[in-house]
Image 1: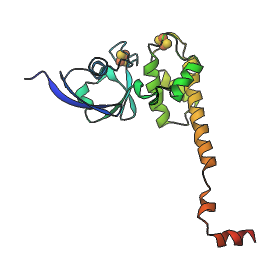
Image 2: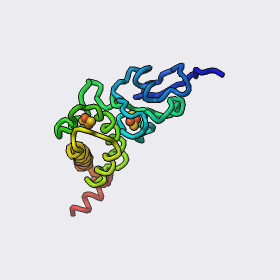
Image 3: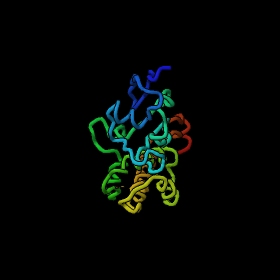
Image 4: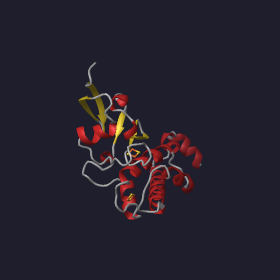
Length: 186
Ligand code: FES
Ligand code: FES
């Protein structure tokens, strides 16, 4: 029986070929094989959420997954949040502005939890955000500032979407024949 397996993983849009033991966790592969150390490891028992990444857009505990289990999935780590120029994402900016981090150890997990959740529930209420955020552990912030940051980011995204919709050309006006418009104004 071989104790090494060939695995192909797609992480942050990049394909990687790895030869790893079948029981190597996704968290260990990300950190030690791919050098993506933004994913933190705390409890290694699925409790703290520090290792949260997105697997096919859904938040998942990387310490509870074997890498071989997610071979055909799209994995995103906290490193994927920043733009090509290295700038912070809107969510990261909100964490900074609301002081949603102190020691920062839990922060990548909260960011990926919130990133996945807001994509799924863009209209989430503060109460719903509180409930989701409670699934990860933070010893420093008291959670209020994390909730503030996620709520603010959700509001900014909704406002940006509304503004894009408001500034989009009116379909009816654009597609209506000139004769109809002339008739309407007569
Ligand atoms: S390290 Fe994965 S949940 Fe704590
Ligand atoms: S900021 Fe330190 S554990 Fe959350």
